[in-house]
Length: 356
Image (cartoon, rainbow, N blue to C red; front, side, top):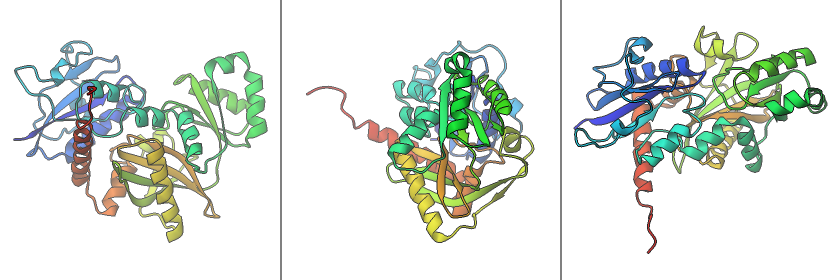
């Protein structure tokens, strides 16, 4: 009997379009002889729309944008056994950004007691908030770039104080980021106080918490991590943006980057990258998958930038390419992720919820 898979995508997020692209690519790698694939589309307004099973891979993202009225706004009953059809066997969340990658949907699936691919509530929420992530990395002893963070209210009430703090503690250039967003949305580079003000105002469109990081001169190196309690790492890959930095446009629109896989690194440097990637994975209590992003300086100093708890599976995405070069083809990677989800779910079922 075919396993019933739910592809959960879209979402009330600035990364809605990225999620659709990921879902389209994912559909092309699923084995439709093994799986009955249900599209579950969340509109940008937050409505959930469960479609009929896909006949095969989709040819465009428009096919994934299920039209018409939602069955019921935000109704989750169709995921559960209802006498007419059994529950879905595994949910594959492909939601990037807030309201999907940040632990909210993961919490919903936990309450529903459904197996799902990828990281749980804690890892997803901590991995989404760059400030919390950095604080945990400090606990793990991971080397990272200096940073300053503040809230919208802090900025509105004491803008000059925070501008002074940035200039005192960091050196130009700096990168200004919304704390709770990915895919380089809302990120700007600033090389002066004037540019910093504009960059903060841009980032505040997307989040109430802002993190400002000191720029690093180094190669951008990424490592894929796969597993539950015993994670394994892929080969390393290098991102070479053909513009100022690896922004949203370069990632998802024009492919304006070069990816070098495997990255040319001394064996000792790669070994340290693997060790750091696993430390990051474990300190966040990750499960399933993570892409760990680093800077490597000319002196071979390793600086962790961040981890992505739900890396993209678009045609330009590094994560599946890293595993392909490690020997795990795209369809096999998805099989592995589904197996890890079921393994984690079955382990949770061993927990006792009643007192003796």
